[in-house]
Image (cartoon, rainbow, N blue to C red; front, side):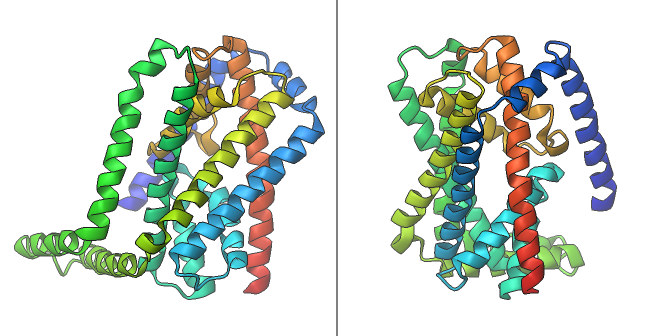
Length: 323
């Protein structure tokens, strides 16, 4: 079944990319995009890359904490380099599996430990995003109505993720046991797929129990805020390098909507088309013209792809050398 779904996912992603990119390029010239990219101040490009790479260090530090400091930050940095590249390139967030696979292969950690640390890190990601988002809202005096109307979505995400975190920490085992009992009532507990899911569920909950979240919550929150604070500042620097003047708080406000859409199961190929469309829909109400929003969206996306590709190649080489 999965093997049948994956090709359709790829076709949908390709279709979205072709249609959306074609529509966007009817509004601007590709020559304009190439011209702006080629004229970005190298200082901004280099500073943006250094900051972007530092966000990988903070991710590695957070995984180091979640794994009870049993895996070195250096190893985790290399894993993060590969993981982030594959996650941005592969459709439907299937690149997340690369972290679990590399953690098991390189550091002999279980699938459950990989899933548990990845789930908790994603929860802290969204909590940090929401904190920075509302911080920006407080400091922006004139917020467009279309953005204000969407605030309930952000609030829903915040409340939902806090509930998920509490359930995982307090009721996770009972939840998996309930799934097992349901499978037994349906007489499908011996199905290989169901058996695997339940077994990995217990493994994940046991791994969650070993994560010292209460003792490390300050470090986890600080690392998460640093990850996204740095990423927002990368956007801000690149926009300045392209001579598009937006305040850092506008960047945080608009960037949050764009980042939250990455959880959608269907994206364009490497995010092309979907990223630029959402970028345009968000940043036009925040002060950019249609042309500026489309061009800056393409330019930003291309530069970020360059960044994570360079780091992904570095991570892949270091992982191969070690193994």
